[in-house]
Each structure stands twice: as structure tokens, then as C-alpha cells.
Length: 452
Ligand SMILES: [Zn+2]
Image (cartoon, rainbow, N blue to C red; front, side, top):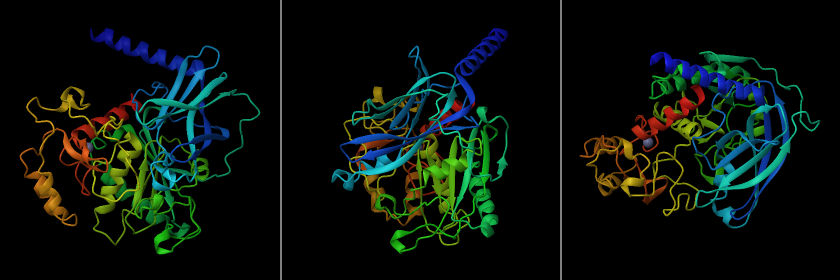
């Protein structure tokens, strides 16, 4: 029996590889585009299609069945219509369209990129976005002839060395994280390396990354900024930095995005990468994470806050960018309006709007006797000041439902109508809490997607 299953695994691996080699070359087709619009209208416009030399994604899992992200890119064989490749992702644009300026009709453009394996024959490329009901609506389509003279075949203008923090081998079988420095001058690269060390130590001390460490590669590239620091508009500080990251994204002080995506992609193309992680040379609390776009965290060796704050954020943001995990908290200021309508089930793995036990996506992890919704002393918890994180921590751990997977009200920026699976989680409280069992299982699923 064992022999048969090994044979089956062998055959399926070979078949999958044949499929990759039948349709793709082991390099990347990078598709750059703009998402433009307001809360009501979207236009996708093509910027450029570029040939890049490394393919770091899976050669086996070409169709993305994780069903995560606001958007999905698909590649079809133009001759037969067969789906050859797909990938889910999120965008800062999808967040912008939920903000007040977008509702007021102010159109903005955001640059984005999809990486697909380089096709051998002409393909049909499509981009779709989930609507309010979470149904995919196609927004863009074009034919791409891989031999076309319209494909940019420029050599990479950068020649920085790719260094390795952790190398476990073949990037097509690993999760490849590329760490980039923002706002570190040439002289400050020692601090950048120290920051990688501190952040990654916490990362690989957290499950499921701890026991899956051999499934990861971590590379970094030392791109120096002209000036030291990160743009902080509310403090009137602006610096000449490599990637143009900025605090106060969507007018939320702690929220950092705004990277020059073309520059980021050009640098990243030097390395095999599935995920980009920016570490910022800043002592000010902040960061961000967008699914399959990038993670951002402030300096893990900063001197201003308690030492553990950036370590909390370092792992929390990766939860967003790697597995599309939702914020389970609901008390901090955000810019979004009606991000999770309570009559629609969100696609994120770790929040739900249903209290129908049969429909709860993490029902398999729940005990049969767990009440739905599950009491967690919400009113008493909320009465404890936000600043007293120790008291909040102790309260949760002494509650009768601590340790149970259930359906706890208050999640996804909404105190009512949106539920999370556990009383505490790295996606809920500002603490060094582990991921809850549901988030951990979700992260594991994504690790498996890249590595199995
Ligand atoms: Zn969680």
C-alpha cells in the first residue's frame, strides 16, 4: 500500500511538472498595471509587461485554490481556453475605495503588479475583483503573445547583491521572503541587518513558522537611501528614500504604504521572492500588510516603545500579506467604511458574519458544546482601558471560554455583527500572543501551497 501511494505521489509530481514545462518557461512575466477609480468606478490600465529571469513560485500548484484576496489574476491558454495559472491578491486600491474621499468621488490611481510564469504560447490574461457580495467580476482582459515586441526585455538596471539570511534550497519549493530596507543610508546597513535578525528571530519563534522554518528562504538586498528616516506627513518630515514609503496612508497616522511599486519590483526581480518584507528605519510605531503585495514594519531595534511592540507588528503584518488574514481587532481607528458588510460572508479565513453553526468556516475546530455566539465578557473587557494591555490580557486568560475555538463577537473593525474564532490572537490584541488555531491552520495551508 505504501509503495502504491509513493508511486502515485511520484506520478502526480511528474504530471504537474510536465504541465509546467508544457506551458511555461522557468522565468517570470511581470504584468504592471494601474487601478484607477473611486467608490463606484474602476478602470484597470496596463502599464507594461516585462520579462524577468527568475520564477520562484510553485511549479506544482499553478491554480490558486486558496480563494483569498479581493482580486484574482488568471492565465488561460488562448487556443484551448484552459486555465493554466491563477493567483489571488489584495491592493491598496481596494482599501482606498472604502474610504470617504472615494465615496466623495475622488478618483485615485495605484500601481500594482502580478507575476505569472512565462508562457510558451499566447495566453489570455484576466483580472477580476470581488464585488460587495464577494462574487468575482472581471475587470480587465488582454491577449499576451510571449514573443511580442511589446514585452519589455530590458536588463535589470540594478545590480545589488542578493544576500541570504536563511537558505533552505530550491525557491520553487519554499516560501521565499525578500527583506528590503527603507530609509537606511549606506552607513546604516549594519542596523538593517540587526533589524532583520530581531524581526526574524521573533518570526521563527512563532507558530506555524517555528516548526516550518525549513520551508522558508529569507533573502535581503541592501538598497541604500539618500536620507535616513521615513516620510511622516503629520510630523512634517519628508526624506529622500529608496522606496518612498510613508506614514499616514489613507490618513491613518500609523498606517504605512505608498511604496514606489516599480522600483520595488525592479529591485525584487534580482532575487527569488514570493513575499516582500520592508523594514523601515524609524522608531515610530507603524506598518502595514497587504495580501500578496508586501509587509511593512518599523525598526525592530527601535528605542522608543516597549521592545516588543515592533515584534508584535512584524509577525502580525505578515499574517495579512501572506495569508490575507483579517484584523480581528475592532477598537483602533481605521479609514474604512463598511469594510465587512454584516450580511455578506467575508473571504478572510479568520472572521465571519454568520452565527449559523453549520456555515461557520472553522466549525471543524469547534467543540460540539461551544455556544454560538460565544460569550467572552465583551462589556467587561471593553471597560478595561486600552492602555492597560496587561489587565486586558489577564482578563481574557481568566475567562471561562479561554482556550476554546468559538464565535466571538467583535472583529474586522466592527464591534457588532462580525465575529472572530478565538478570544485572543496575534491578529486581535497588540501583544506577543500566538496566532489562534484558526489563523495558524490558515497560515499552514498557505505554506503548504508554496511548498508541497
Ligand atoms: Zn486568529
